[in-house]
Length: 354
Ligand code: SAM
Image 1: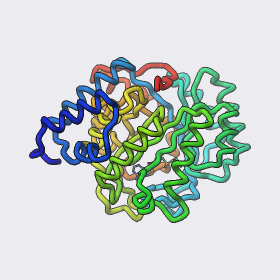
Image 2: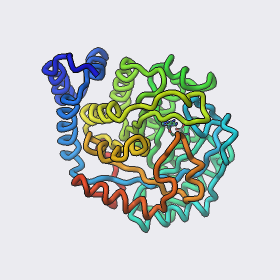
Image 3: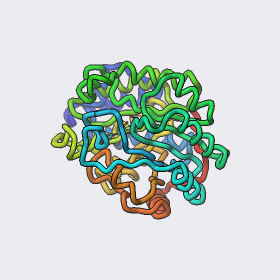
Image 4: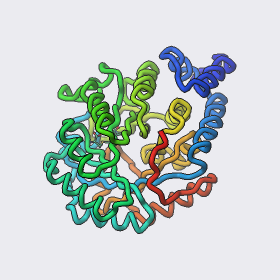
């Protein structure tokens, strides 16, 4: 943070972003490196204005079902990477997944998110059956997939089976930075191509990145903003990087609350109608992280609907919150938390206006 940079200049940049919903790479870098607490407060007040203009004080909830922690990939930051041999691996059966949806529906969820590692056991055929079953039982609900990089053909087949949305964070736009976070078998270009494929097929698409991932610079964040502006997704998920003890990044520092909130505010001004979660990772690095995320411009929360006995095995990072709570407890807790800051959790699909 740089308190010495002239706040009038920085506020002018925020006003420009508010008005034009875009900045140049240099302007993004200036804002991100020059940020300070006074500027953040100014940004958040405008971000809340935009959030409330489109979504009022409604907070959409997504029921997250972490259905497999098997993964063929070896991302350097991720606790469920295939090299982590200390992890108890699990897969939920179709019946268990459907009972998570049943409980979720009873609790007022109208969006289910199936998230998992890239697990070859769940073939396209099995996924298609699962998608069809969920949509047959809950036709009024949206179904989101978050199962990584697949072929255009597979994405199309899941869409045809009834999947509505797809979450695939681009992680970092910069190709060199991407290669510092991932094994050689993965590339930024392929990840980004997947996002364009998903968009072209007709999914409501979510992308995003980790804030404070190892080697990340303000230039990288600026490139992330430019990429997201171009992609124009319906959802953007960002959260702080948090180290996991069994990964090569075990000793790297976590991303900060302060920078994550600042990026949330900037994203709300850049794409005002975007659906923006206050993530579990944000709630993990600060006890009031999710509330502060909403007050910085976020409007979605994604509580866990996974069975309690597997939650401790879906640890992408250390100290993840809510791993011991029942779904109903999580739902009630979030309702109270949102009320405490003047927002309310609503029972709705919560489609994007973008
Ligand atoms: N396999 C799917 C994929 O690749 O998109 C979905 C699961 S993946 C574990 C979900 C997200 O978790 C990733 O996109 C990444 O940004 C986030 N994540 C993984 N490890 C993390 C860490 N150590 N700290 C914060 N977020 C992390």
